[in-house]
Image (tube, rainbow, N blue to C red; front, side, top):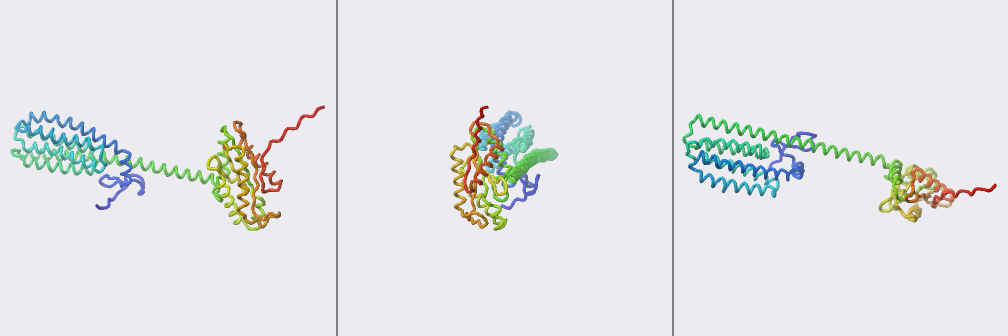
Length: 404
């Protein structure tokens, strides 16, 4: 088969497309079938049943207009067309779109062929009046059954060829009547096929428009999420930034669960930058960020860059000892990296961190700003105590009132 050429009905050239025969591009066709295929199949089933009811009413007109072939007509209408159509109504909901639409086309050709043959062979005085049935099958197939346009075009061409042949082969029809009936059937074909094209084009255009809008909305959502992530992510370390920390802490503190924060500071980091340069300092922060990230539990925790060489780890619904254990692991893991720190003035020649820990009790109101301030106060206590250690915030004990 040749490659389809598509033109865009709506959207850009990279969006859903449809060709001159109103066929979607393969990807769009598959999506449309997934969304509308079942409804289409049941529409065909209903229309076949409805059409059979009307189709068999013409057994009455056949008895009145073509009594010479009434038995043959009944056998063919009921035994062939009706039986085949009932099988079609059963099959359409079990077939793929490819075979469903082609079977509908074959069913319509079969339905049109019989009255054409009966019109040609009857010798009854009023047999020519059955010609009106043939225009109705065109209208039914192209408009009620709504054959896909490419199939409607095939059906219309085949039906006109069958009808015009029957008209020419039928003896005793005056030339002027042949011409009049031919004009009627051709115009009926043009009318019904034009209506089919307009309906099919509207279906395609509506779907392409809706799908294009959906794709744009999805791209906008992805872009929005990306921008949101960027706005809440520290560019250097890839960790969440201060904005993310504030937002998440506010949500956590509004809930009933215990919340703890660890304020982490790189010891003597200014001296590290002064001795090795800022690029080395940035690389050091990236390595430490990975250590913090790896140390986090699987859920209920995150690490954010607070600013400069300071980081905050937040824990939600963690037991009292979990935060202490995590702080000890971080201090130990950073020491294990053994990142050289030639600028330190003390006896330690590697990069270390100090950690300040604060926790809000469960089922008690917690304030994000208070938690951060308490963990920051604990951090400075760790620094005053010699760095490379952990300090936990303890509320000051109120002094006892004196006696006069």
